[in-house]
Length: 160
Image 1: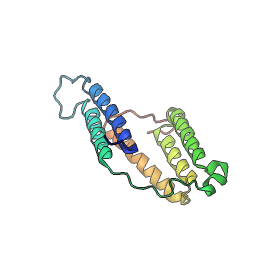
Image 2 (image 1 turned 135 degrees about the horizontal axis):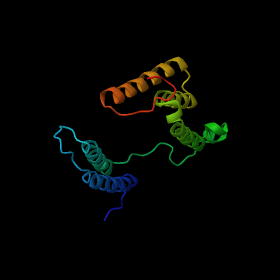
Image 3 (image 1 turned 90 degrees about the vertical axis):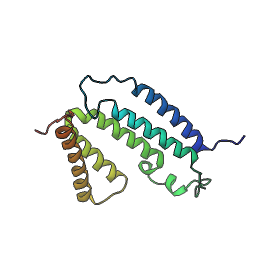
Image 4 (image 1 turned 45 degrees about the horizontal axis):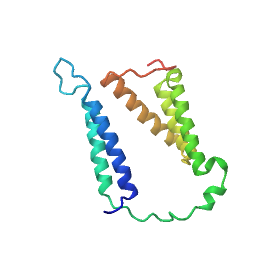
């Protein structure tokens, strides 16, 4: 019997999560009105997609990772806020701040602030392009979800 590699172990764990998610998705009741897309459709599609992706991950052959045995000393010797673990912590704090600011500031402002702040933190320096892109994507998501899908998103300080 062969030993599983890391991708295969991760694929098995993801497949178990997908199977549990699909089992819960099949428990969502159908509404009595006939509709082409019911409330249980998205969770089922998401669960099947995760199951298929975990199968793809299981059969993917892992390639050699360049420099996997070496630690880059330049990354660990730099400023504290730019070390790899500090970036993970700063990103987690930014997401937590986003969750707390979502209702008071609203979806558009909080999401734009998160996108602009994290991309600037990770080194993107064209702030005008960053702001325009972030605001465009966030506004497109906001208008699609509120106008087309009738999903309530907090407006915050903005009047729309």
